[in-house]
Amino acid sequence: MPALIETNDGLKANSLQHLALLDMSAFLHGDAPARLEFAQSLAGSLKTYGMAKLRAQDLVGCNIPGLFEMAKQFFDLDVQAKMSAAMPTSGNPHRGYSFIGQENISGITGFADSLKQGKSLIDVKETYDMGVPGDVDAENRWPHAEALPDFRRLMEEQYRALEQAHLQILSALALTLGLPSESFTSMCSKSHHEMRLLHYPPTRLGDLKAGKTRIADHTDFGSVTLLFQDSTGGLEGRHPSSAEYRAIQSNEQECLVMLGDCFQRWTGDHFWALPHRVTMPFAAHPDQDDERLPERFSIAFFGKPDRDANVGNLAGPHFQKVHYDSMTAGDYNHSKLVRTY
Ligand SMILES: O=C(O)CCC(=O)C(=O)O
Ligand SMILES: [Fe+2]
Image (cartoon, rainbow, N blue to C red):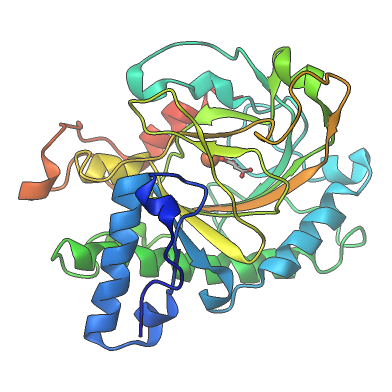
């Protein structure tokens, strides 16, 4: 069973536009060589491009079309209904609905380089975040059931399905490193992940040049992020040591995989977290200030280590390129979160 569904010249050109589509079903249902081949293709793509692309249909139990449809219905509710599930103004616990301008990611742009830029850009986005059902330290905030009767059921179901995909990806990465398969998953056993719906409303190009963006440059905080986007465009990534952004194209049938800071820290920079942002697509006409970008939807599952897990370097010869002090995943997460609200 081939691990690679498509190959293309984009890879050779080091472009993020045409990432090869990897066959995760080879990992889930294949024999040992097929599993290893998938894992190596995944690790190779992540190490080279900071990102890998999977077929969403291979993620067992995931209903991505259903989630996009639900996101549309949720963000279409009136403000009052959305605010019935409002995120605390501090963003902590990180649960519920954030209105446009509440979370501004430019507060953590340059975080890895200790660049303190402050919140220089406003994100023109609204979001809904939830976590594992029953977490007493971070209770979910649901809109009233009358407003959207199936919302909670679908979100809880899909959280569990995406959680499994996240664990499988961690096992695959352990395999490529010759480690026991539970090396990373054992630090994610308490399910302290987050699932997020995002809506970027239609926006004037002129606004995106004057102190606003869709989401500012950042790396994700956790272990592995699974990201689904519609085909509007505007998602871009760059190598951490480069200022050059490349467009990341995908659609609702594809799952983008990227590593977060905690995975980079565990592996002492053997793997790296992809700095990314969403802004005006390269295809837009930047001179036409009054041109309006269409609305955009995306869905993210942020895999995160247990709050009490250590996110300093793991022992091992591969993992000592850069030293990261021991600290808990909870403290690390908080150190970034406080800068964004
Ligand atoms: O909307 C997207 O595609 C990216 C969202 C994102 O990077 C985030 O919420 O961390
Ligand atoms: Fe992100």
